[in-house]
Image (cartoon, rainbow, N blue to C red; front, side, top):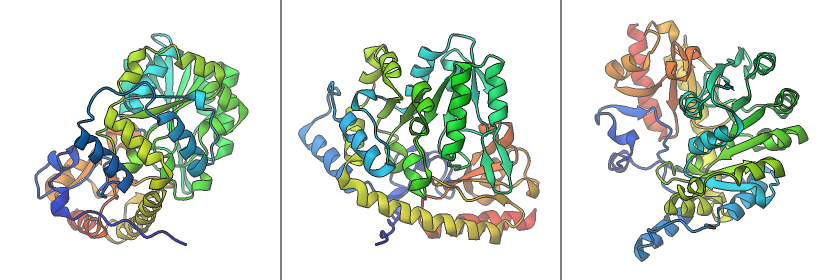
Length: 387
């Protein structure tokens, strides 16, 4: 039986939110930039947080907040991924986890491969860990985006010590095939390098069977890899700090045990509670409803781009609620988002922030009411008609 799609909250309720999506721009701007969704929380999350507030349960996060067992169950149930519980650790958010792992596996000045265009904090995170960004762009074909394995192999042969992978990829929404991930693992293992995989969009794959956690891609991937993820993107919990770090095998788990105790202490108590509730079977029905709503919106957006932006280049994402759209044909400059925001009153993410490959691009968040999506694309289409 297909799931009933979630309904987005009314716009007047959403504008009462205090998060950056609803506070950064004036009320006449439709905000579709940052990766926040417009749906209510899963009921299990609402209940646990409401009860905590009622109890005044706002103290320190306990040594074992239940994240390990909850995530192991979720990974098995929803991602077909079997994880050893002793390989699971936690921290405040995904980028925090990545920077702490990078500090353990590279030396200052080591180069780290990133596959651009990519989530902008990847660049800052590598630098924060003392590394140097080595850009190996994705290869784009008419069929989609894929990793440049030859380019990554050359970078590692030339001395890069790690690969920071985005799986599924942000902003393109690419779900990397298992064979590609296994090939990447072989390349990294031959070079004596580490792969750290950001998998925060993994639960948002439209074909769950197509998504392969990097550590599950092959025995080699488990030997040389780490994964970092969270319920925060799927369940809209970015303001509640909690993420999961997964070691591929016992040696990596031993490395993670050397992290300062403060790394786990940075996990917010409400973040831990919310992630445990999100990962529970009780939230599966809500998750199914979310994916049904996003699938409908993905199809709607594809039709709206064709109608209102016929000269744009757009490939519907394999995962997530973020659309990567090349609008360079409309002459809005290298960074079209400011022009679109000023003249169409729609706020989209700035393509060049994702790397040089983002020139002429915007990223659109379509996790919203279908009517909001229609209005936003009609506004941008009106601007395009005048271009």
